[in-house]
Length: 176
Ligand code: SF4
Ligand code: SF4
Picture 1: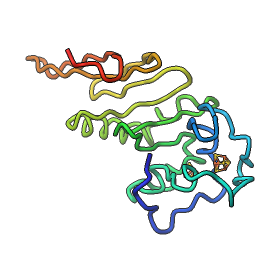
Picture 2 (picture 1 turned 90 degrees about the vertical axis):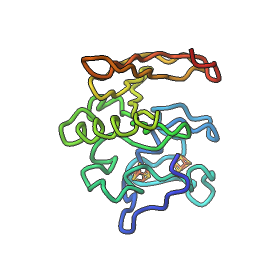
Picture 3 (picture 1 turned 60 degrees about the horizontal axis):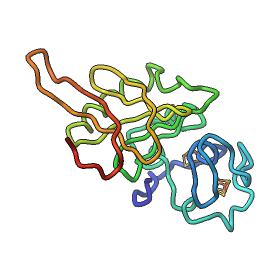
Picture 4 (picture 1 turned 90 degrees about the horizontal axis):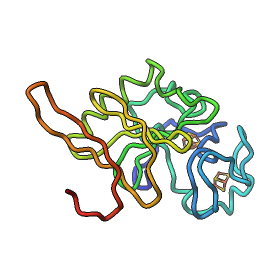
């Protein structure tokens, strides 16, 4: 998560509490997509002074990225973006607005960053319910990732351009 990047001066959570719903938080035994039992939606945290360290340290991508304007604030765009520990840029979709990330206000930025990050073997992925959508430069691919597996994208140059093959493999498996 964005544990080391400080918030951009002037950006504040305000009434946005979406990161108390969308991410899974192991320290709170909270699954993805359900409100934390301590959350006061639209108002804040019911145990603010005693909230766990992961909550104190977490800042979504909007908070730490000066290039993302007010339309990207999660309370407005209806999804939360964060840099996951695996280095992939993850978009957490809200079940009530599962396709909000496809809005033309946001989609081109996600697509551009997907191409840029793929040069460094990192991905932009959308987590929507049980599915993952991998945003590729030439298409988006929806898949289910079994527990303990990771997503790998192989890039093969062809006369028609780069071919992308998406697969899941057990975490720690040796690449083929
Ligand atoms: S999702 Fe971002 S802006 Fe919203 S409460 Fe969490 S850190 Fe703050
Ligand atoms: S403990 Fe507080 S800050 Fe952390 S997820 Fe729950 S409501 Fe949000």
